[in-house]
Image 1 (tube, helix red, strand yellow):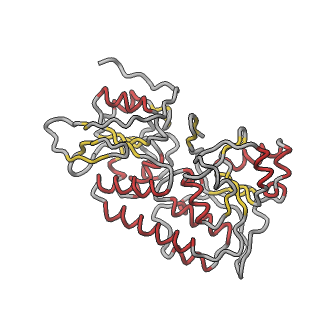
Image 2: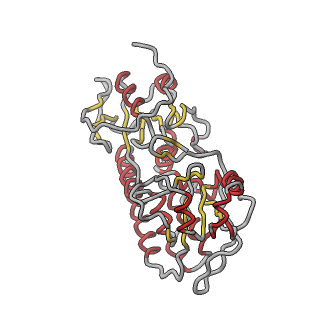
Image 3: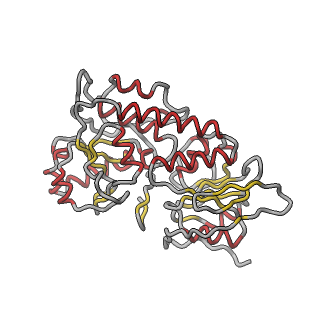
Length: 355
């Protein structure tokens, strides 16, 4: 077999839909599950024991399902205490294939939109099974979690999350918000990338009672002209917390942004970095966004139970500047300040790029 070299940084994001069964060693009893590409993948009856999670959201789903002990390696940008001591096998788009193979995993979990096809091709060549997830909207989060729950015999836990998510968003969607502030989510400012229709981030923000000005764009991660942002004139500019300081510094050097109400009035708000990860912890993110933008009002009853165990409340840290005033409605208290979050830069993958 040829030596396995480190993966090239060239990204191939197109995944074929070819069918086929990945077969483990003949002596290993298996059962078959179908991944999101329609591939039949053979896995041990009790679930894989040596799993490589090649995306932060995959690691978060496995931790949430209670199988962190099965994870032997994770990708860069994964920041959960339960797997902090695991080897990092490269970034989601720049995997270290040699290191992955050396770990002898019995399954590698990939995401069609966040991992290169070249990695899947190599795993095929060396005979390592892999299972592909697909993530764009929140329905995909539910389906991915269902599949992993079935794989590891955690179906009840996966179903419980889906039922809870449905109950919470139905409750929030029924809230008679007096105001839905015009909001713009900034993924990057040079060039300007944001979220559009089909994005799980857009869905989270709309459930949180925001009027996202880019909701009509028929692409999940679209680039937009700065002139368009000026025309939409959002009242709130939302930024992942891991980029809060750098974005604010950059906006000061771009005069056009000063004409946007959100920037001019100091409503550049950090949202939890976890909003970039399509995992069960989005429920915690949704709660944080609602509380920060609308205050601790009766709408918080939609969440009922405490945050997910090991969720965002484990992290500390606060962006340096406060949000001067919220958007009060019908006895709603003013927002106490920007969302809190700490941790390293975490990626959001756009067509042909990853941030």
